[in-house]
Image 1 (cartoon, rainbow, N blue to C red):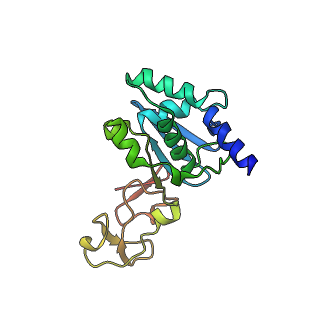
Image 2 (cartoon, rainbow, N blue to C red):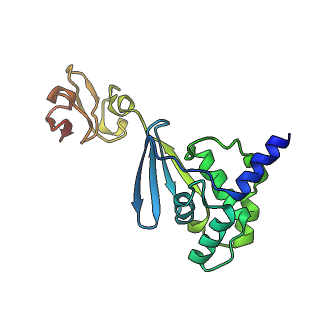
Image 3 (spheres, helix red, strand yellow):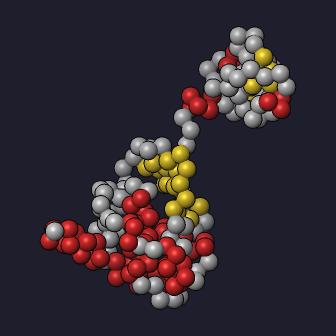
Length: 191
């Protein structure tokens, strides 16, 4: 029990280290897109989470993070906001090791009401699971009209059957992987 309290106490004073392995990051305007190569998930970090995540280095304290964010947003940000942000980042598995932090004790609703920030500045992670190539490239469903296909393309597949065509720019190895009239150009269906 003492060790559990100690680990939570450490969390209050030092921010955890963000992951650098098996992820791809891209900054877009003030936000950051993070693709996790292990979980095959893409995460969009809000501007505030981007600032916090970049300072999660096991050296910067939660209090320091609240000061950094307060300066950036030109308003007082307390540690509860930072703890919520850290729990959001942990839920997205963006730290080098799990914190085993109890996420349920932090109320997003209380934080939203307390700070009255625009939603764009709230410490939120938006995540999606990227489909596997096999899921994207499997368009073997039979069709009798373009309306039956999610991309509106019905044609002859590589076996001469009428089927939903893969979308333009789908991966291919030969022209047979593309619908009638399509060409496999540089590994992707064209037309």
